[in-house]
Length: 320
Image 1 (cartoon, rainbow, N blue to C red):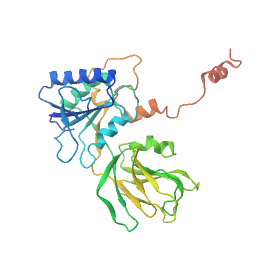
Image 2: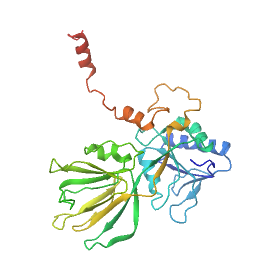
Image 3: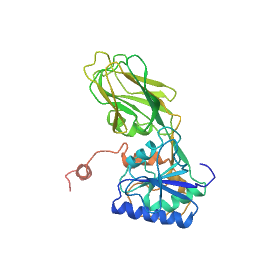
Image 4: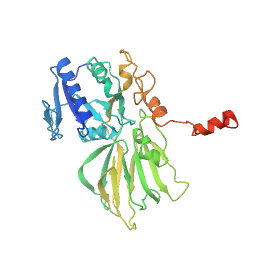
């Protein structure tokens, strides 16, 4: 991460419940006290925090050096979508009780997280985004710009054939490595480390057992075309939002975006004093890979499903 301390912060948060309000107030008071020269921006919303300047997304948006999110994975996805046509500033994300694979920091660590950023000690994980373009049945581009999307990529949500060697399934998922632990995983896709540059193609309920998930290099361009004889259109969802409908003969082309999302690692604060908090949700900072810790902690990777009752019987024989 750049050695120059941030001069502006964009605060992005989920709906302002009482815990969110208190966390925002504490964080902003800390920034104003310790880093008084930093500009603080917030989205143009009725519940914007007092004293924050209004920030609007777009080509003429004010420059932002750091994005701070308070919420869950969805809040991070929303923050990334605010920079859909260009580079995303480093993202420092704090969990507000909702655990997910994109949340490195617990909200109690906001002082240490900000200190790591402003002291230049923060380390970055560049999470891939995908860029997609839509075409009509004559191959003409629909719209002028490609749109950057994040994490899950897009998936065709109707049971229609696509012309990928006439593959037929209930849908197709195109995913980044970060999205490999989301819808892609539920559809039987592989778990891929987010530091890898790859694009996943995962069929949803394929009709053929030979139609298996594929992992392509990030230089690949994947085109999914709805067959001319398809009896229905297909909705294209990006991170859970249906943003386009493909009619028979139309297609979408997906490739890696040149603008990844730089996420600040939890391991950035391992050299700072770390108080032990009993019963705290999530995993604390550590020198091992944050992703590996989250896979073990959140997914319970390779953990057995034997119940305590069965363990008791296996140890005691008669259950005594």
